[in-house]
Length: 167
Image (tube, rainbow, N blue to C red; front, side):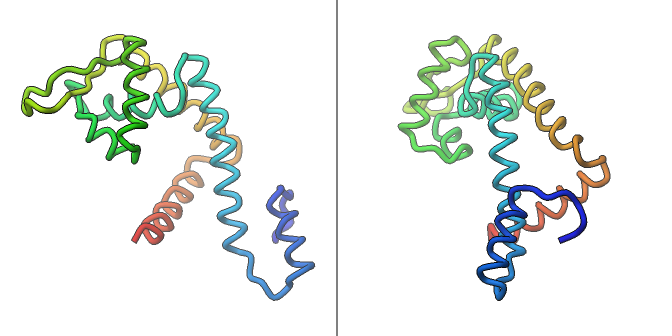
């Protein structure tokens, strides 16, 4: 460990070093910090979305529709696959978002048996605001410790790690 400040993960690593000096805890240091960072920033982002009247899961649906491009429409099956949700979980989110006037479900013009989920103007305006709000929270957390070059290097390293673990 370098002479840098210590965090909660350092305390855990020191305990393992005292009890099991034979262990290489490098992976625990990396993944412990990734986990804690993810939780902390996720909690902050969730609060920012809540101030806009939506949950993280609801944001994910709206954002998936938004980034699909005009006309901001996908089938429930496409949404479920993208968000890795069961159809039941997706139905609950869609019901709530439709009641709020943020999206609408209509017959799929390309499949008589299917539905199409489309952002409404209100949903588009909300997701535009929410994506900016969420990114501001994430950027604030990142820039509190890293400059742009460091953040880029970290993103590259994490990409390599993610690709290796998803093989």
